[in-house]
Image (cartoon, rainbow over all chains, first blue to last red; front, side, top):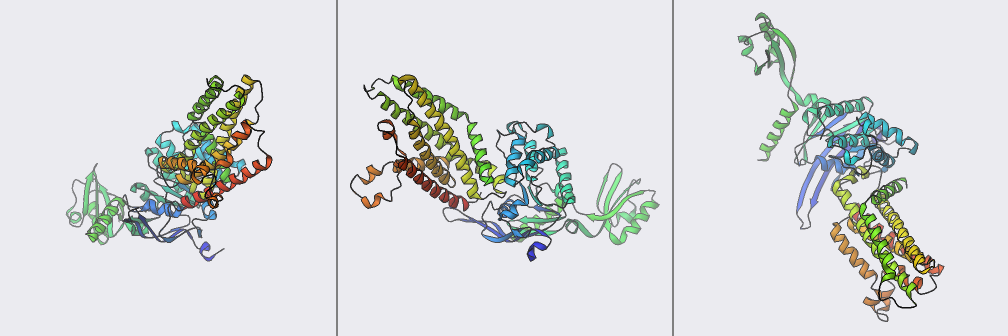
Length: 315
Length: 244
């Protein structure tokens, strides 16, 4: 085993760059300089607005697009090598399949390409179709599948051959809320089983719910990368929720930020140092403190703020 | 090898489901059945003329099908992005192209076999003779279609289907124009290098002569393998450098 293979990186992208050239010689730099390391057994989110370079980066990793520069490794092997490809599963964004096939035939086809032994093709295909909620549609032709069913099939085919690394490009696209929840649970199950998941998504709530670490791309470069808690926790602030009071006590109102009142529940944030005073004040006013926890920004807010800041820097 | 065979099978069964193939087969069958009713049949050469026209119909019908299958397959898979889920697996691009070609070639083989079966059946019904030599002519057609399929697939990896059809037509014309372009006597030095598809044209010896010698058949296979190999390598190089 090489030194690299022994480290805990499942995916390593270093200095990825992609320049598209038109026939007239015009250049467009889709990816400028992207480096990402995804640890084994984690769910890593890849975020960014449209045109940020997410899909191009994934395509370079999968060998679908030729990189202008950069190094791409999967589980210590060159990402383009058959060894690496055998260990990954990929769900493309809005996957399409040959529509004349049945779900089982499609799974057999992709299973054979993934190297699943012939005698295990049917059982593994049936098992995965059931896992993604398509047990009743095994013999249905894909031409009759809804958008959500095709998405589920796409997820199932990505899991053929029990890959150690799964790359999902917008897995919740086209799914109803139940389907989105199923996908989230599936990703968590994969992580629990030791599988590494690289998730590219626009659904920030999905990323926030499942990802251990996040990389945010903007204009072809990494704008931020960190553990999701470190990205979102607001240093020095605590979030408080309380009820049973008609208005905030003066001692609370003086230090509270982001105050909201809904359904008889107050929600606000206070400096860490004022938590004891605030809790006592609410107690004295006859209220009930429901929750006291570190203040956490929503990923949506963080994302918007980051992009706005990046925009200002460019301007 | 398993990847190539898996892709070839998928291409074959996908092609066989297309209704256009059935339409071409029925149309060609009707045309062959009507050949004996053509008015300017020469007395004494009916069988030979029937054989020539039957093989010409077989050639044209096969050409239509080959063009339709070969030049549209790769562009449509790239456009619909079905190719992503294939090439993200341990499948090299050349394997994808070879599998696509193999599936197309097998499909055209089934079609040519069906055509020649109709030819021979009509011949037997009308003239009372089993014209089995037509099968040799059909073999030549099938091999030529294999070369055309390889060319179409190779070119269609980088251009649109319409452009690929135009290029295919040019390739077919040039491939059959050795005598016209180089002359019977002139440009002898070029002749050895001219990529001629005439090697597969055995209609005359099949319909008017005594058949095709085994050595010629063997050399026909060598030309076929050379052409197809070269074109698929070209296709793999072109496709390998392309962003999807």
